Image 1: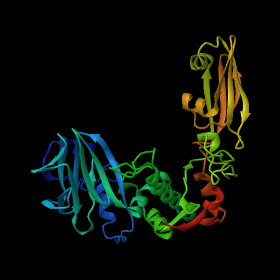
Image 2: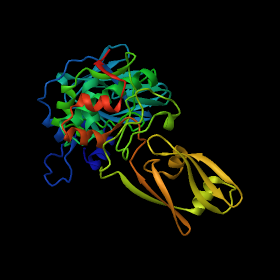
Image 3: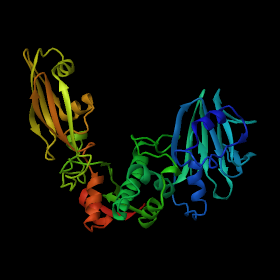
Image 4: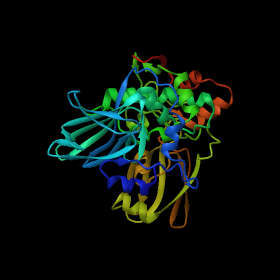
Length: 388
């Protein structure tokens, strides 16, 4: 990433060169510019499907730029001007229009020459920048090829150092999930967001040779059910068994059912959380002095399904998902013991537990399973198919 000092400098400028920090060999981190330069010679892939990924939403201004000279176009596709490469610009929104240098329109697009990269906020991205005004605010969008998007998503969601077949499995899951979300949740302005509510997307700083190889090796492969992309959710570790979707989101998916996760030894799987009786009393409200936290029913995957906070006045029933959300627990898979005035939750797994366990995918890859075997294990009843 470009140094934050440089970013502050950039936001104070209108059209000056983006400062290179490559000369600072003592920099504690590899900058996004260094990553950019390291992959300039990688061939561009043919555009098959373009995604509109919202990088900044409902903002009044944004710092943007391009690694090469670029054309600025209005919402009708007409070229209105040019900007110089490696320069930073502050785009602003007011009265339903985006202002960039001397140009103003309800929508502006920055198109880099010769396969250049774009700069938004404090990250470099592949693709083009689209600026769309909405009153006094705007949405900043990266228009990017699906697989180019996945190069970065894969590195953000799974360690690039993991086995190739695990990375390929993640690439297929991420590609499928992106298309599912695009079909179900897209807005008139964009198809996807860039955070954990969608998939984490931070641009080319998260790319690696291994992530690009995994995406390219699985190009055009997704998981389908009834010829449609599935909701290919994933999580860090399940603590032994994944969970059926209806026990987490109250909606059954035939391809999201409980299966062995093969991740019991995942280093992030074991956890312990201490909860005071007072915290549970506040959560339940009106139960009196808390006497017990009782697990009344477990899910097929071994998670808390129904619980009761037992008080001196009454009992309060809630689901494991509700308790996990209220207490910020790593998962809903735990056992309860009491230690004085506190309850000790010894748990396993991290995440919702539905779909593919990433640590399980790693373990299966280490045992010699290929990506197709891995994804069809976790998403049983689905089929590998080309992108529609």
